[in-house]
Length: 186
Image (cartoon, rainbow, N blue to C red; front, side, top):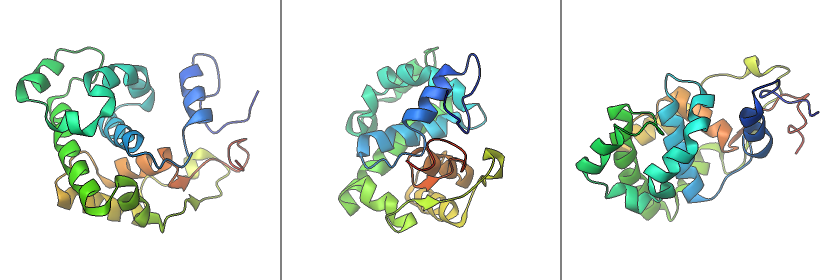
């Protein structure tokens, strides 16, 4: 068994799989970056495990996170999603997905890709931290504050600094794997 930061124990297989195969690994694919941006926003106030269990529901509801299709969803389509038990049915979060897709496309247009825009906030290389236990990791940083502020200025919602720090951890802009974790050195 691997020594990992989180996802240990019985009933934590989904979490363990996410830890081992995704969390903290640098992402440069715009579609996956958009997916993680939306999922992290949906997670606000909930556990990440709750979102992971609904990830497939989100993929179906939001065209596998195709930002062009999501940006053109109608109010009627978004309202219908409020009855969908496969996703978090919070009205503000559902509508934020369309708004954020529209802003995401504007950023792609301006910078050539969302990836090019995003990674500027960490000088295009992951920030490597050295924590003994996962609880030592911060919930926000100067970088997540700057990213959050810029995304909000551009019109995105559910992109507060804490959400953006979790996003940065998820897409590998920050390596917060603990030094004892098997993933840390990878």
